Amino acid sequence: MASPESNEAVAASPLTGDSALATGTASSPDTDALAGAGARIIETIQTVLTALILAFVFRAFMIEAFIIPTGSMAPALLGMHGVLRCPECGASSDFGPVGTAQANDPLFRPPQLAFCPNCRRYSPLPPETPPRAGDRILVHKWPYLLGGWFGPRRWDVIVFRDPADPQTNFIKRLIALPGETVEIIDGDVYIDGRIARKTAAAQSALWAPVFSQDLLPADAPPRWLAPDGATDVAGWSGLDTRVLRYRAAGTTGRTLTFDSGLGGAYFRDVAAYNSEFIDRYKGGAPRAFVSDVRLLTEFIAVGGDGSLEVCIDHHERRFVATFARSGDVRLELTGVEGESATWQGRVRPFIDGQARPIEFGHVDRRAYVRVDGWPVVQTDESGYACDVRLLRRQRRHRPIELSLTGAGLSFDLRRLRIERDVHYTYEESDTRRAFAGSPFMLGPDAYFVMGDNSSNSHDSREWTRFGSRLEGRYERGEYQIGTVPADQIVGRAFLVYLPGLLPMDERGRWGIPDLGRVRFIR
Image 1 (cartoon, rainbow, N blue to C red):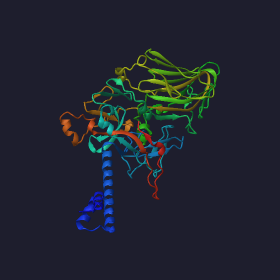
Image 2: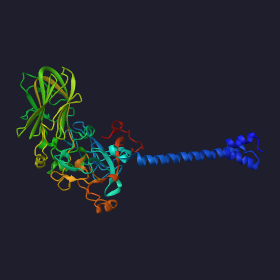
Image 3: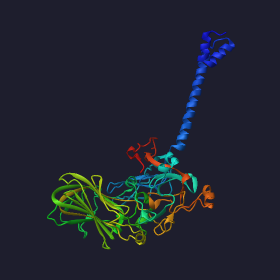
Image 4: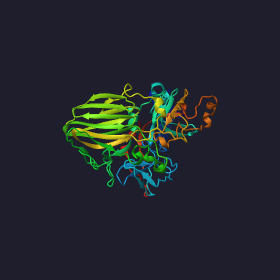
């Protein structure tokens, strides 16, 4: 019979205890050491395998990393690109490669000329211009797997499998949902015959620079002029500096208008990223005029008692925002057909010497005013109706006009800049669906997507091919060409965790990541 001590040993270490009882001898220290080492190796292997399995499950169902391959989502998300620091005005902008270079393609070729969106000039690039890799992003998978409230929403940025090649992933913005009718009119999205306004988060990512008073070329004439084109405007000064100044002399209003350049170049749908297609913009096939813009500035009262007026003139309709010294804010609409409407708001009075951010814009068939970062007043359907039938027939042949008017109040305008909204385009040779007058109805399992870089995006508007994976569905009438089925959506892009990196230099050193561009995707 074994002693009590032997029973305790067996209980504490079943394998070694049983072995000792069977042989009638105790294990040696070397044997114990080998057994312990073997156990640690097995434990390490188990830990590694568990980590790999968890990583696989995490990647398959939770979050996955991707690299943006092309510029179809520029400027919010960039594929392989270069950076131009304009030698004329100092503005920084991104440009894409010539051809179809993707991700980390070593054959990146910059265009011969790069376009500056601020001064509208073209700068030659040295052939050794270093390319940057596409943005690296993270994609949520699990919310879409849950569906319902967590499912795909309009304006989400999604990653999905290319309908023509399921081995390739695309990234676009989700525009229309199953069962809806989508139509692109004057650069805007209409769903079931009504304007589809962007969410505040999506809109903030879709503004593109047009002009900044802080970035003036040294040899360029002023862009703000008298209505007759003169640079000498009573009361106004600093037209060729960073600060526009108005000094009132009486109550008579004095107006400046923005010079949009030859052929309205500043308000055409031209993207700096698309420098490869520079001839389209300079030659005989100009881009469409954009209709949605905003003006932002710091408004500083310096004396008097009057107002600043900012005007956005669409020709068929004119919108005027008035900022009075007292804090009263008025938004007026007048139309060529005799329509008129007024909306009122109020903010804190404008005190001398105090810089107050103001913003006046028109986007998605709505004019609005913000002061100190907060919404103050905006148009509504009762005063600014949207007639889709009329819009389908309209063609924008002239650029919009912007103007500033001072009356009675002296003030300074600092950090003045103009931006424009994304303009979803129609290309006569390529667009096959959802253009003005040809609404596209989606089936019960179909999603419609477009790239933010609308004029350089291959998306639902023009797809004609699909892969073998969808052939059976198409034959059964379950797949609609030009759409993305729900089960082909990988997930929602939510974070740029590593913006475009510079390549390794000749000494094998990587550039410092631009962590300032790490951001959530909206």
